[in-house]
Length: 255
Image 1 (cartoon, rainbow, N blue to C red):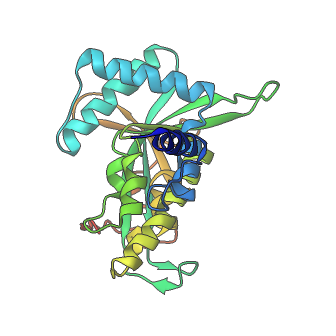
Image 2: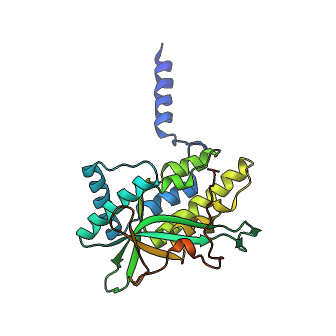
Image 3: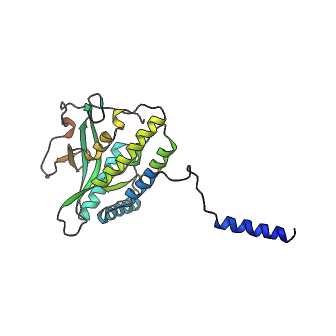
């Protein structure tokens, strides 16, 4: 090639270096994904401390489980460890009635649902604040949002959710709200009708229901019930907010 070819080659190299790097819309992370990443990454000092203790304990003891009974046993061991380290830790059981949801705009069947996770009461992270707050610990957080059919955007959202989630009530509520909004959009795009147990308020009730009891494990198969004041309370399986007080078992598919 002559000198003209060398000039052309040099121009091509300069144009390539100076040209802006363009990312296609498909490769750009969605706004909700960026927001969710920020919320998940914004942890208080107490949340970081408790999360690290739990993960370290699970690794050291090689804890794992299959099924609800083994999961309850693992939660008891974690709670026992946290208490030995001076934390006000309990297994927490929520119960809520899904008989009618006016805010979601649809009537649903009557059903009292229950869910168990762990919580720790800690002092506020803010200086000079004497108030306490709840730190919620869920060993199966990610699985609560699984869908059989999902859009790519929803898959991207759920893939960054942690399996073990440690968060304040405020941060948990924000995460659930963001994920459920994307879930609603995903189900609509996939042509799926959204069942009542996939609504935002219903999902948040798993951890944030006003009808909750602290459960203290003792011997295997034996349970002591505590309310928020540490006093004995009745089994939440017989009580629901605005419900009939009847025990109801429901099995929901993953959709």
